[in-house]
Amino acid sequence: MLSKNFLLRPRLVHAALCSTTSSTSTPACTSSSIDTITVVNGLPHITIPLPSRAERCVFALKPISNNVGDFLAMLRAEDRGIDRAVVKNAEGVRIASNTSIQTLFDQQFTLAINDQEYAVAPVALEAPGREELAKLSDVRQLVGQLYEALHVGEFQLSREQELGKQLEALAKELAPLEEQRAELLRHAEERSAGLTWLGLGLMSLQFGVLARLTWWEYSWDIMEPVTYFVTYGTAIAGYAYFVMTRQEFMYEPAKGRHSLLTFHRKASKHRWDVARYNELKAGVAAVEGDLRTLREPLALHTARPAAKKAAAGLFGIGNLRDIVSKMQ
Image (cartoon, rainbow, N blue to C red):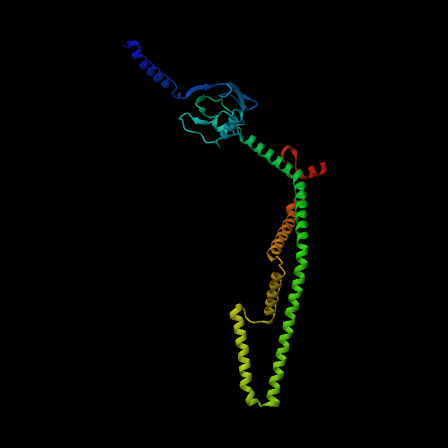
């Protein structure tokens, strides 16, 4: 007969398993605060504990240039174990990534990293005045002009060399096709000219036959209906040309049409690649257009005639291009 301790042993094991399972449930998000924020040379330095290595790291933020997205990107770059990083305001609403650091530090916010939340009470940052913003804008403009003056000429020269190489390669590939095209065009022109002279000969022959029949063999009374039907037949032939080509029969367009048909017929017979030739010609035209645009005076930023009295710019610099030209 089993003892009472043996009967109660499975129940105790089951109770231990249940207690172990309940103890391993997902913990709730814990919260703490971050109060180590200092301002060094106008830039806020915030110290944040990293979850993976259990160490603290200082991040220097730029109030105007950086935003919330940059701040979170710095956190993820510093600690690869961060799966989720969010910034929320005091009401628990998420703050957009494009919000500037200057705007973020005007209020209390919460930084959520994985399952840990940190309440941040930022220090007050001095907002730049209008004069400082205007001076900053002038500095940016000056840096842009300096970069343009020092690098635009070099870029245009390299771009022109690159386009020249492309044009040379296209011209080299196009040269044999141009020779074959000239030969095909010459043959088509000769064929069209031959047919033109043949038409003149047939019309002269027709005139001679009708004249012979009218004044030597028969009389005008007999040949008048014949000439009428010949003329009407010519009109029918002209109308048939219009029906087939949707163009009025005129000598010059008809000669050009026949020459073009002969050219394409010969090109197909000799396997001359018309599509490749058109593609190369379009490429040459595009490269030449780019070169023409690149060599225009406006594109080269040529110096404009100076005014009588140049206004002094930022830090007393009036004409940046003159200074750069003197430095060179």
